[in-house]
Image (cartoon, rainbow, N blue to C red; front, side, top):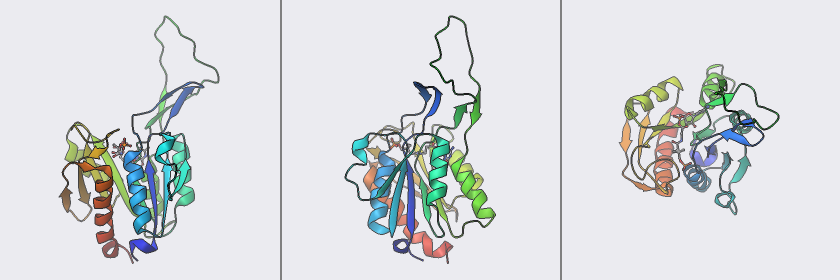
Length: 226
Ligand code: PMT
């Protein structure tokens, strides 16, 4: 089954985990990589949906892909679960917050002169949830693509994620390099595929990088799926 017959679900941007009604923890993901992937997916696939955390609204206005806004990592997981279908391609370019406060204060936390601590718990790992769904055969023929934003031992950590999250492909961006990663208009990506192949891309615009990633997905689909 080819990409033009499939639905592509792209995630992008950060998520927020709230400490109180006015404060949250998050990260500087702009959503640009996700938007570029959703644009490119729409050109090539049967359907493209973009599930995104809080980003500049202008990035998704006047787009032809379906856009689903979310706030927290739990909400992103729920939206992915809702959109998932047999034979879908899932591209996780989002940077979901990995930790959330155990308790969200109902009121603004007041300043104090004393040290205080906040207890955090792990948020759900969306790609690991998809791995579970695949292993229980709740959903068949998914093709999953992860991203790895790393600052050290970049290749080792990316390859660990490829295996641990049971991915078909992972796109490593070494975010310590200028012109790669969060907020930039360009990216520097190395693509690792579960068959052991790798493709190192030079710095290019996020649109060009998205096209190269979709090329790799398109080339691999018939090999892995019925
Ligand atoms: O949005 P931009 O400013 O354009 O920047 C793009 C980007 C740098 C955010 C993007 O290219 C990128 O690298 N996204 C992944 C960032 C990240 O959170 O990496 P990670 O190593 O924490 O997560 C690894 C993979 O697991 C990612 O595919 C992530 O989407 C996924 N994940 C992470 C946490 C979580 N709770 N669930 C997940 O599924």
